[in-house]
Length: 215
Image 1 (cartoon, rainbow, N blue to C red):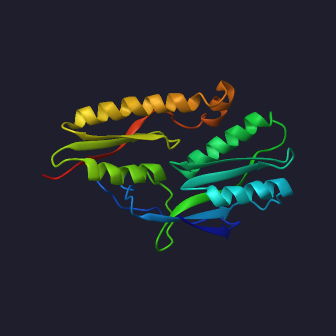
Image 2: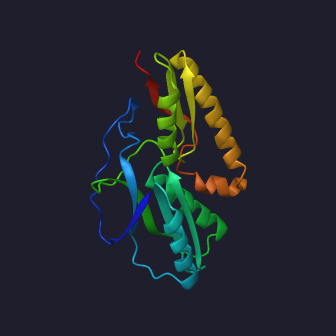
Image 3: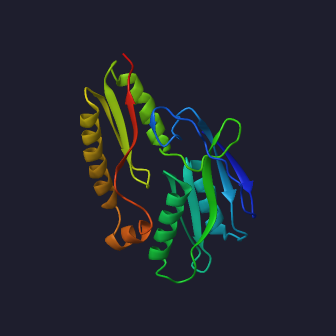
């Protein structure tokens, strides 16, 4: 995925993507978002270590992301490939606050948006980049008349069910496996850190996309 980098210290007028594959949020066209754009949103000077970490972030960040620093502690934290910039910012800020023990201020230095081929930024997209790839696979594997579904959380954790004969079965299966995934993901963090990261987010899996292949 192509990356671009922009410095912007004023409020941004952002356009959301607006195409749909099937039922869902209306922002889930997996072909629409082909690039990333990272925008510096704070007039802060990075230390050498923070600059090195930010360069690493730029090399690997995907979909919605946020890079947060604590100037006093010379620390940095980031999350990417989440369901929204809000989610990435909340998780990175929460991790920063937990790991720096409340010493100094955790500040958002940059955020990353997915963009369309004509440069529009996706700000309310309903699925993560991995989710978009899963949608393509779901469509190809679903037999005529059968159903598929995708469930995810605000964090971007997502799972799919494919080729079910009924929509209810597809929904039940994908919700069960999505909830198992979020439980496993949570185990990677200390309980206090997880609470800080997700205090403003829903970790409940919800159906984000469903599909029935035409007969």
